[in-house]
Length: 222
Length: 185
Image (cartoon, rainbow over all chains, first blue to last red; front, top):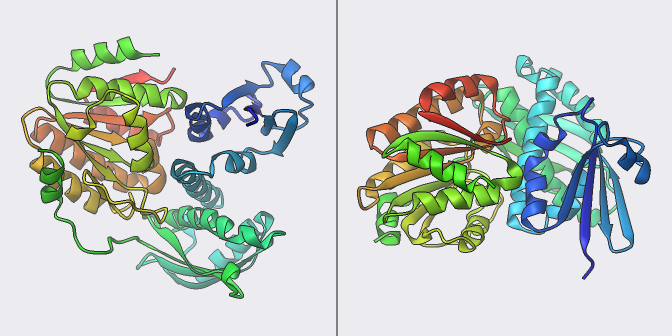
């Protein structure tokens, strides 16, 4: 098996927040014994030259003699950490946070009209390969929304994985809009032959039978 | 590694307390294990609330340490969100970490049912809780949780991964906890 080594390059001068923003992902790599180097190229310009880094943040994966190079950190991290539940939870966390930050930048919490929000979201999501975005239902009081969208992707098989990330991302966006914690759940998916991917966004309530928690604790700890 | 610093800090805190540990993400694993090894001594029983680390992964991590996990009950707020769930005797899976009322009730019921006098509660982590919930809801929850811990004379530990917490919440937290132990540098 090839040994993996990861190099993360960032500029401490213009993006000092990078190590903090991706702390969970970096910690995952350490925990899984993947040798990881986080390099501030402002302090160590010789590394930028050595590895031919033209833009930051940048992620480089070395597997034996192979090199995989990524501008930005998300795509590279996805490749490295999406194989287990912990990795998926980190990607969910990063996607949700990304959604919240983006909505904050667009000051979406001040918009309450469906059409205005739909317009802004269309503009926001376009560069991310999402098109034909429709905000079908929007109720601020009930903190509930329904959206439909299409994904621009080359490989059909990736739709399902992308939708999981998108679900976290939308949850983050609408948590900012509604001012309360909501999650997005996919109801229809292009990977199942549907014309659009559709998501319902609302507060997630407990499902299934109510557990007797005290009884569970007594059974588990004697 | 901060093993000595952690042990010293826990000893200084005394019998019952509410403490915030600021952890460096890269040292999360070792720091967490050290705290657990110390806090589970003397037949202590406790609740471990995990916001963003699935129980399955936590269990594997703890199996590598010498912490006595048979005396810990876990409340997992992420596994169901990801669409997974593997039943186990000592874990309660909640739909998400956003139902803070449901989480408060679950914690209160679990604490009451814990046997013995020597009890603790760990919240892992504040960083994740802040991402999934608006600041106002977090403040109310933390006020409730820390009051509950004091009332029931628990040892309460809150983890924060790095310092990425909303400044308003960070300010309020200073009032809720007895001590902030910064291991993040």
